Image (cartoon, rainbow, N blue to C red):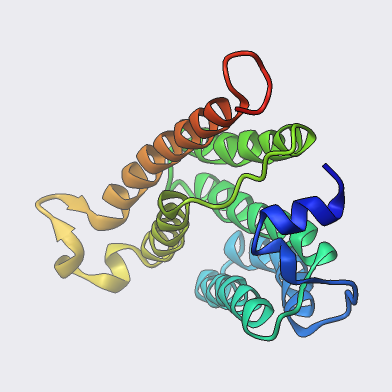
Length: 204
């Protein structure tokens, strides 16, 4: 399957443009550059500044996709950089949470491991002519992820007792939810790939 056939098979790819220097791509690059700044602030005495950086970076994730679609500026470079930027941001945030003692290391390993597994699956699927698009569950997981990071960084000290369920902080509940969604959505992606591939290892 050549590039033209792939674009015809996937409506989203049909609007891919050749110019790479677009506003959506600039936002994606900005998100990548914000990652080290995020880590520095989170792991020093400027956690709230780091939180602000995380929120800004997360918003660029939404805006770059929205602008790319509405302005018909979906580019090959953007499709390459966007998932990289997302995974860098997620990994940096959750690893920082472990360092701050706000998240268990084994939970973060599952979350980041899921991201790496799906990243590895996509090129394998592409080699078989299969496009793995983001699922609704995967998008929901991303939203819960971002909210959970914000909750954990603020903590009960800033949010108060209204964000407690008994003696459990809602951020901790969110973290368990992210782990569950990571596992289920990863299984969904792999099962969908297996279904499209067919029992013979060829496209069904």
